[in-house]
Structure formats: C-alpha cells, structure tokens
Length: 87
Image 1 (cartoon, rainbow, N blue to C red):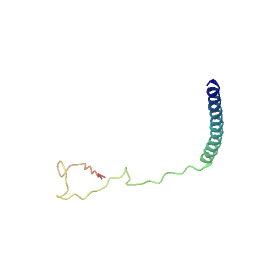
Image 2 (image 1 turned 135 degrees about the horizontal axis):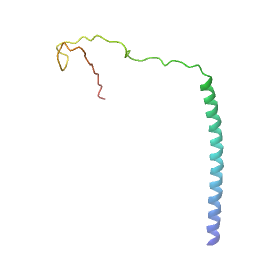
Image 3 (image 1 turned 30 degrees about the vertical axis):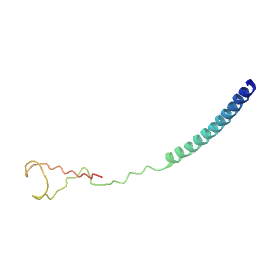
Image 4 (image 1 turned 60 degrees about the vertical axis):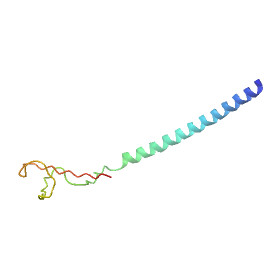
C-alpha cells in the first residue's frame, strides 16, 4: 500500500512539474507578445478619436408641439430633451 501511495505522489509531482514548465513557457511567450504590442502602440501616431453624436458644446433648437409630453412652462429659458429606449 505504501508503494502505491509513493508511486501516486511521484506521478502527481511529475504532472505538477510538467504543468509548471508549460505555464512558465506561456508566461514568457505572452510577455514577448505584449512587449511587441507595446512597441507598436508607442510607434503608432496619435490619432484623434472620431466624434460621434451631437456636439455637446452646441445649443440645438427643438420643435416642441402641444402633443409633446412636457413639464413646466412653455416659455422656459432651458429645455431638456431626454431620449430613452427600453429594450
């Protein structure tokens, strides 16, 4: 029984050592790949992100009708329009 236990422990140690070597190899490989990507990012010219959506610095005129749900006076100096999509 002791011999079977010893063989099992040795087998587990061999499997653990093999896994440890594989993990070290993967770690080095990923480190090299990340280093290459960082180099490419550093060499890439800085590009401005394309603006999407309305300009937040511009005032927009809204056509509000009597059928538009609203709160407050119709002649308020500021109108806040909110759009929600409940999906």
